[in-house]
Image 1: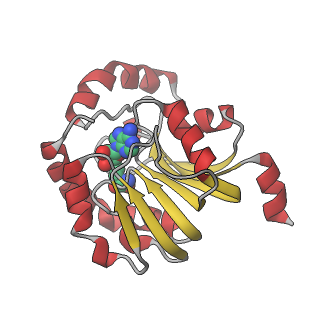
Image 2: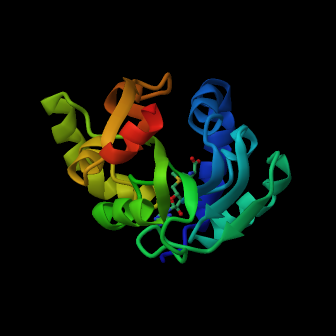
Length: 211
Ligand SMILES: C[S@@+](CC[C@H](N)C(=O)[O-])C[C@H]1O[C@@H](n2cnc3c(N)ncnc32)[C@H](O)[C@@H]1O
């Protein structure tokens, strides 16, 4: 994958600066993530300190500069973490390995959204859940059009990020039942970049989880 040393440096700074408001969302995302957890695109490791119920974490991150920064934060985690060089579209894990798969501000950046979701599904054990925290396409047409226009320059500056993806729609299109909360982040330009936080399960797993 393309290397992004400057973005890795800036992203780490921005994620640390955002922690006062974003920490609560990261906690909401990771706190309930149970069992053996895979975080796809773990970046600089901003989530590691927020995992509470996990017994073990596999943090997959393909970009070496991001991985180096994540390695420096491994001691922040309360449970063992294995940091692995891997891409969302080609996860080097057997089927049904993980209890929880976490996507955190990652599905905006993967090259192939559909493939990343189906890989997440493949490595998820029956009854497991996908937990996500992502910025997404606006449901206001005017803002969504602006996001479309911004996609190229934004992607250039932000490590290949797409501001205009309908990620919940993509999860639903692949058969997941999706529960989510939408919000606008309290950050500059937040109204142009709506966020979602939620959980996705396969319908048969949803029934099993309720039993
Ligand atoms: C905006 S950062 C988010 C990092 C972290 N998950 C967080 O919540 O702070 C997006 C991350 O996705 C990673 N990424 C980009 N393309 C990817 C892919 N195809 N597979 C897995 N990760 C990818 C990037 O290297 C980067 O670390």
